[in-house]
Length: 337
Image 1 (cartoon, rainbow, N blue to C red):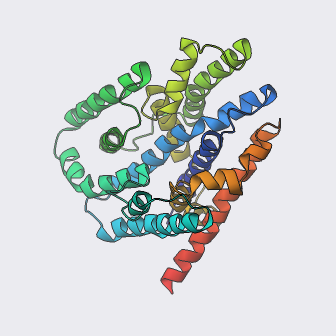
Image 2: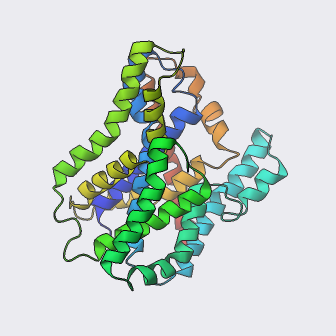
Image 3: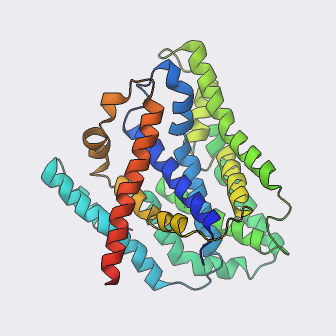
Protein backbone atom coordinates (compact mmCIF):
# COMPACT_ATOMS: atom_id res chain seq x y z
CA UNK A 1 0.00 0.00 0.00
CA UNK A 2 1.38 3.39 -1.00
CA UNK A 3 1.92 5.89 1.80
CA UNK A 4 0.28 9.15 0.82
CA UNK A 5 2.82 11.34 2.62
CA UNK A 6 5.43 10.28 0.05
CA UNK A 7 2.93 10.54 -2.80
CA UNK A 8 1.96 14.07 -1.76
CA UNK A 9 5.64 15.01 -1.79
CA UNK A 10 5.90 13.52 -5.30
CA UNK A 11 3.03 15.73 -6.50
CA UNK A 12 4.41 18.90 -4.91
CA UNK A 13 7.90 18.24 -6.26
CA UNK A 14 6.64 17.76 -9.79
CA UNK A 15 4.48 20.87 -9.58
CA UNK A 16 7.57 22.82 -8.48
CA UNK A 17 9.50 21.41 -11.45
CA UNK A 18 6.77 22.38 -13.92
CA UNK A 19 6.47 25.85 -12.37
CA UNK A 20 10.21 26.41 -12.46
CA UNK A 21 10.39 25.40 -16.11
CA UNK A 22 7.48 27.69 -16.92
CA UNK A 23 9.30 30.67 -15.43
CA UNK A 24 12.67 29.91 -17.05
CA UNK A 25 11.73 28.38 -20.40
CA UNK A 26 8.66 30.59 -20.80
CA UNK A 27 10.80 33.70 -20.16
CA UNK A 28 8.44 34.79 -17.40
CA UNK A 29 11.16 35.62 -14.87
CA UNK A 30 12.65 38.33 -17.06
CA UNK A 31 9.29 40.05 -17.59
CA UNK A 32 7.57 40.21 -14.21
CA UNK A 33 7.21 43.70 -12.69
CA UNK A 34 9.01 44.62 -9.44
CA UNK A 35 5.84 44.10 -7.39
CA UNK A 36 5.91 40.42 -8.36
CA UNK A 37 9.63 39.78 -7.96
CA UNK A 38 9.52 38.07 -4.55
CA UNK A 39 6.81 35.43 -5.24
CA UNK A 40 8.21 34.92 -8.74
CA UNK A 41 11.70 34.19 -7.41
CA UNK A 42 10.32 31.66 -4.93
CA UNK A 43 8.34 29.90 -7.67
CA UNK A 44 11.00 30.16 -10.38
CA UNK A 45 13.88 28.74 -8.36
CA UNK A 46 12.16 25.69 -6.94
CA UNK A 47 12.75 23.32 -9.86
CA UNK A 48 16.28 22.24 -8.93
CA UNK A 49 15.34 21.73 -5.29
CA UNK A 50 12.39 19.64 -6.47
CA UNK A 51 14.64 17.54 -8.71
CA UNK A 52 16.71 16.69 -5.64
CA UNK A 53 13.55 15.76 -3.76
CA UNK A 54 12.28 13.59 -6.60
CA UNK A 55 15.59 11.72 -6.87
CA UNK A 56 15.89 11.30 -3.09
CA UNK A 57 12.36 9.95 -2.95
CA UNK A 58 13.13 7.45 -5.70
CA UNK A 59 16.33 6.26 -4.01
CA UNK A 60 14.52 5.84 -0.69
CA UNK A 61 12.49 2.98 -2.16
CA UNK A 62 15.05 1.74 -4.68
CA UNK A 63 17.52 0.82 -1.92
CA UNK A 64 15.02 -1.75 -0.62
CA UNK A 65 14.97 -3.58 -3.96
CA UNK A 66 18.24 -5.49 -4.31
CA UNK A 67 17.39 -7.19 -7.60
CA UNK A 68 17.07 -5.61 -11.03
CA UNK A 69 13.47 -5.51 -12.27
CA UNK A 70 13.38 -5.67 -16.06
CA UNK A 71 9.63 -5.12 -16.05
CA UNK A 72 9.95 -1.87 -14.09
CA UNK A 73 12.82 -0.70 -16.29
CA UNK A 74 10.79 -1.38 -19.44
CA UNK A 75 7.71 0.38 -18.04
CA UNK A 76 9.70 3.57 -17.41
CA UNK A 77 11.31 3.23 -20.82
CA UNK A 78 7.86 2.84 -22.39
CA UNK A 79 6.52 5.87 -20.52
CA UNK A 80 9.28 8.01 -22.03
CA UNK A 81 8.62 6.70 -25.54
CA UNK A 82 4.86 7.14 -25.12
CA UNK A 83 5.34 10.91 -24.95
CA UNK A 84 8.61 11.86 -26.60
CA UNK A 85 7.76 10.19 -29.93
CA UNK A 86 4.10 11.31 -30.33
CA UNK A 87 4.80 14.83 -29.07
CA UNK A 88 7.79 15.19 -31.40
CA UNK A 89 5.64 14.07 -34.35
CA UNK A 90 2.83 16.39 -33.26
CA UNK A 91 5.27 19.30 -33.04
CA UNK A 92 6.64 18.55 -36.51
CA UNK A 93 3.12 18.48 -38.00
CA UNK A 94 1.72 21.47 -36.11
CA UNK A 95 4.68 23.84 -35.86
CA UNK A 96 7.53 22.31 -37.89
CA UNK A 97 11.20 22.85 -37.21
CA UNK A 98 11.92 19.28 -36.05
CA UNK A 99 15.08 17.87 -37.61
CA UNK A 100 16.01 14.20 -37.98
CA UNK A 101 18.43 14.32 -35.04
CA UNK A 102 15.72 15.53 -32.68
CA UNK A 103 13.40 12.76 -33.78
CA UNK A 104 16.10 10.10 -33.36
CA UNK A 105 16.82 11.38 -29.85
CA UNK A 106 13.13 11.13 -29.02
CA UNK A 107 13.22 7.44 -29.97
CA UNK A 108 16.19 6.61 -27.71
CA UNK A 109 15.26 7.28 -24.06
CA UNK A 110 18.68 6.24 -22.73
CA UNK A 111 21.32 6.71 -25.42
CA UNK A 112 19.55 9.67 -27.06
CA UNK A 113 19.08 11.44 -23.73
CA UNK A 114 16.00 13.42 -24.76
CA UNK A 115 15.35 13.97 -21.03
CA UNK A 116 18.43 13.88 -18.83
CA UNK A 117 16.61 12.83 -15.65
CA UNK A 118 14.84 9.90 -17.31
CA UNK A 119 18.06 8.70 -18.95
CA UNK A 120 20.08 9.02 -15.73
CA UNK A 121 17.39 7.26 -13.70
CA UNK A 122 17.19 4.35 -16.15
CA UNK A 123 20.98 3.98 -15.89
CA UNK A 124 20.78 4.06 -12.08
CA UNK A 125 18.13 1.32 -12.15
CA UNK A 126 20.45 -0.81 -14.30
CA UNK A 127 23.44 -0.47 -11.94
CA UNK A 128 21.46 -0.44 -8.67
CA UNK A 129 22.03 -4.17 -7.95
CA UNK A 130 25.78 -3.59 -8.08
CA UNK A 131 25.46 -0.57 -5.81
CA UNK A 132 23.27 -2.55 -3.44
CA UNK A 133 25.78 -5.39 -3.24
CA UNK A 134 28.59 -2.94 -2.53
CA UNK A 135 26.61 -0.86 -0.03
CA UNK A 136 25.49 -3.85 2.04
CA UNK A 137 28.72 -5.83 1.93
CA UNK A 138 31.04 -3.25 3.48
CA UNK A 139 30.81 -1.86 7.00
CA UNK A 140 28.43 1.02 7.61
CA UNK A 141 31.40 3.22 8.48
CA UNK A 142 33.09 2.54 5.13
CA UNK A 143 29.80 3.11 3.34
CA UNK A 144 29.46 6.46 5.09
CA UNK A 145 32.99 7.41 4.09
CA UNK A 146 32.28 6.60 0.44
CA UNK A 147 29.07 8.66 0.49
CA UNK A 148 30.84 11.54 2.25
CA UNK A 149 33.64 11.51 -0.34
CA UNK A 150 31.13 11.78 -3.18
CA UNK A 151 29.25 14.50 -1.32
CA UNK A 152 32.38 16.61 -0.97
CA UNK A 153 33.55 16.04 -4.53
CA UNK A 154 30.18 17.05 -5.96
CA UNK A 155 28.81 19.71 -3.61
CA UNK A 156 31.89 21.81 -2.90
CA UNK A 157 32.59 22.76 -6.55
CA UNK A 158 28.85 23.12 -7.27
CA UNK A 159 28.37 25.42 -4.28
CA UNK A 160 31.47 27.57 -4.36
CA UNK A 161 33.00 27.39 -7.83
CA UNK A 162 30.11 26.76 -10.18
CA UNK A 163 31.92 23.81 -11.71
CA UNK A 164 30.73 20.21 -12.17
CA UNK A 165 27.46 21.80 -13.13
CA UNK A 166 24.37 20.11 -14.49
CA UNK A 167 25.95 17.87 -17.09
CA UNK A 168 24.64 14.36 -17.61
CA UNK A 169 27.47 12.34 -16.12
CA UNK A 170 27.71 14.39 -12.94
CA UNK A 171 23.96 13.86 -12.56
CA UNK A 172 24.46 10.09 -12.71
CA UNK A 173 27.21 10.40 -10.11
CA UNK A 174 24.86 12.43 -7.92
CA UNK A 175 22.23 9.68 -8.17
CA UNK A 176 24.88 7.17 -7.10
CA UNK A 177 25.68 9.38 -4.10
CA UNK A 178 22.00 9.60 -3.14
CA UNK A 179 21.69 5.83 -3.36
CA UNK A 180 24.71 5.27 -1.10
CA UNK A 181 23.56 8.00 1.28
CA UNK A 182 20.11 6.45 1.66
CA UNK A 183 21.67 2.99 2.08
CA UNK A 184 23.88 4.41 4.85
CA UNK A 185 20.82 5.88 6.58
CA UNK A 186 18.86 2.65 6.36
CA UNK A 187 21.72 0.52 7.67
CA UNK A 188 21.48 2.22 11.04
CA UNK A 189 19.52 0.76 13.92
CA UNK A 190 15.79 1.48 14.05
CA UNK A 191 14.12 4.35 12.21
CA UNK A 192 16.85 6.12 10.16
CA UNK A 193 15.13 9.48 10.69
CA UNK A 194 14.06 9.00 14.32
CA UNK A 195 16.41 11.61 15.77
CA UNK A 196 15.36 14.33 13.33
CA UNK A 197 12.61 16.65 14.70
CA UNK A 198 9.84 16.83 12.12
CA UNK A 199 8.97 20.52 12.26
CA UNK A 200 12.56 21.53 12.85
CA UNK A 201 13.54 19.68 9.67
CA UNK A 202 10.87 21.52 7.68
CA UNK A 203 11.97 24.89 9.07
CA UNK A 204 15.64 24.23 8.28
CA UNK A 205 14.84 22.88 4.83
CA UNK A 206 12.75 25.91 3.90
CA UNK A 207 15.40 28.24 5.36
CA UNK A 208 18.15 26.74 3.19
CA UNK A 209 15.99 27.42 0.14
CA UNK A 210 14.68 30.81 1.21
CA UNK A 211 18.05 32.32 2.08
CA UNK A 212 19.50 32.53 -1.47
CA UNK A 213 16.09 33.48 -2.87
CA UNK A 214 15.77 36.38 -0.45
CA UNK A 215 19.35 37.42 -1.22
CA UNK A 216 18.50 37.57 -4.93
CA UNK A 217 15.39 39.61 -4.17
CA UNK A 218 17.22 42.05 -1.89
CA UNK A 219 19.90 42.67 -4.51
CA UNK A 220 17.30 43.16 -7.25
CA UNK A 221 15.44 45.67 -5.09
CA UNK A 222 18.67 47.54 -4.35
CA UNK A 223 20.13 47.76 -7.84
CA UNK A 224 17.01 47.32 -9.97
CA UNK A 225 16.91 45.42 -13.27
CA UNK A 226 19.90 45.72 -15.57
CA UNK A 227 23.39 46.83 -14.70
CA UNK A 228 26.30 44.76 -13.41
CA UNK A 229 25.49 41.61 -11.46
CA UNK A 230 27.06 41.57 -7.97
CA UNK A 231 29.08 38.53 -6.91
CA UNK A 232 26.60 37.76 -4.12
CA UNK A 233 23.76 37.54 -6.64
CA UNK A 234 25.78 35.22 -8.87
CA UNK A 235 26.56 33.02 -5.87
CA UNK A 236 22.89 32.76 -4.88
CA UNK A 237 21.93 32.09 -8.49
CA UNK A 238 24.55 29.34 -8.74
CA UNK A 239 23.37 27.66 -5.54
CA UNK A 240 19.74 27.66 -6.64
CA UNK A 241 20.51 26.48 -10.17
CA UNK A 242 22.37 23.32 -9.15
CA UNK A 243 20.62 20.54 -7.23
CA UNK A 244 24.10 19.34 -6.21
CA UNK A 245 24.92 22.50 -4.28
CA UNK A 246 25.15 21.89 -0.53
CA UNK A 247 22.24 24.21 0.45
CA UNK A 248 19.94 22.55 -2.11
CA UNK A 249 20.90 19.07 -0.93
CA UNK A 250 20.35 19.97 2.72
CA UNK A 251 17.07 21.66 1.88
CA UNK A 252 15.86 18.63 -0.09
CA UNK A 253 16.87 16.19 2.65
CA UNK A 254 15.24 18.19 5.44
CA UNK A 255 11.98 18.64 3.52
CA UNK A 256 12.03 14.94 2.64
CA UNK A 257 12.55 14.06 6.31
CA UNK A 258 9.50 16.14 7.25
CA UNK A 259 7.27 14.30 4.79
CA UNK A 260 8.75 10.92 5.71
CA UNK A 261 7.84 11.58 9.35
CA UNK A 262 4.33 12.82 8.55
CA UNK A 263 2.04 9.81 8.35
CA UNK A 264 -1.29 10.63 6.69
CA UNK A 265 -2.15 7.04 5.86
CA UNK A 266 -3.11 5.95 2.35
CA UNK A 267 -5.48 8.28 0.53
CA UNK A 268 -6.72 7.11 -2.83
CA UNK A 269 -7.06 10.49 -4.49
CA UNK A 270 -3.53 11.56 -3.53
CA UNK A 271 -2.06 8.28 -4.73
CA UNK A 272 -4.01 8.46 -7.99
CA UNK A 273 -2.86 12.02 -8.61
CA UNK A 274 0.76 11.13 -7.87
CA UNK A 275 0.92 8.07 -10.13
CA UNK A 276 1.29 10.08 -13.39
CA UNK A 277 3.94 12.46 -11.95
CA UNK A 278 6.81 11.00 -13.98
CA UNK A 279 4.73 11.19 -17.18
CA UNK A 280 4.10 14.86 -16.42
CA UNK A 281 7.85 15.42 -16.36
CA UNK A 282 8.39 13.55 -19.63
CA UNK A 283 5.57 15.22 -21.54
CA UNK A 284 6.20 18.80 -20.52
CA UNK A 285 9.96 18.51 -21.13
CA UNK A 286 9.98 16.71 -24.49
CA UNK A 287 12.64 18.80 -26.29
CA UNK A 288 10.76 19.51 -29.51
CA UNK A 289 7.51 20.24 -27.69
CA UNK A 290 8.27 22.37 -24.65
CA UNK A 291 9.04 25.66 -26.45
CA UNK A 292 5.58 25.51 -28.03
CA UNK A 293 3.96 24.51 -24.76
CA UNK A 294 5.01 27.78 -23.15
CA UNK A 295 4.78 30.03 -26.21
CA UNK A 296 1.78 28.76 -28.16
CA UNK A 297 -0.34 26.89 -25.59
CA UNK A 298 0.29 28.61 -22.25
CA UNK A 299 1.11 31.91 -24.03
CA UNK A 300 3.47 33.15 -21.34
CA UNK A 301 4.39 36.32 -23.22
CA UNK A 302 0.83 37.63 -23.01
CA UNK A 303 0.68 37.74 -19.20
CA UNK A 304 4.30 37.62 -17.97
CA UNK A 305 4.38 41.38 -17.39
CA UNK A 306 1.32 41.47 -15.14
CA UNK A 307 1.58 41.87 -11.37
CA UNK A 308 -0.56 38.74 -11.08
CA UNK A 309 1.96 36.71 -13.12
CA UNK A 310 3.02 34.46 -10.17
CA UNK A 311 -0.60 33.43 -9.53
CA UNK A 312 -1.26 32.90 -13.24
CA UNK A 313 1.92 30.84 -13.54
CA UNK A 314 0.94 28.65 -10.60
CA UNK A 315 -2.52 28.06 -12.08
CA UNK A 316 -0.96 27.21 -15.45
CA UNK A 317 1.46 24.74 -13.85
CA UNK A 318 -1.41 23.00 -12.04
CA UNK A 319 -3.36 22.88 -15.32
CA UNK A 320 -0.40 21.35 -17.17
CA UNK A 321 -0.02 18.74 -14.43
CA UNK A 322 -3.72 17.82 -14.44
CA UNK A 323 -3.98 17.70 -18.23
CA UNK A 324 -1.00 15.39 -18.65
CA UNK A 325 -2.09 13.32 -15.63
CA UNK A 326 -5.47 12.77 -17.29
CA UNK A 327 -3.81 11.62 -20.51
CA UNK A 328 -1.47 9.30 -18.61
CA UNK A 329 -4.35 7.83 -16.60
CA UNK A 330 -6.19 7.04 -19.83
CA UNK A 331 -3.03 5.54 -21.33
CA UNK A 332 -2.51 3.26 -18.36
CA UNK A 333 -6.18 2.27 -18.34
CA UNK A 334 -6.03 1.42 -22.04
CA UNK A 335 -2.85 -0.60 -21.56
CA UNK A 336 -4.50 -2.77 -18.90
CA UNK A 337 -7.49 -3.65 -21.10
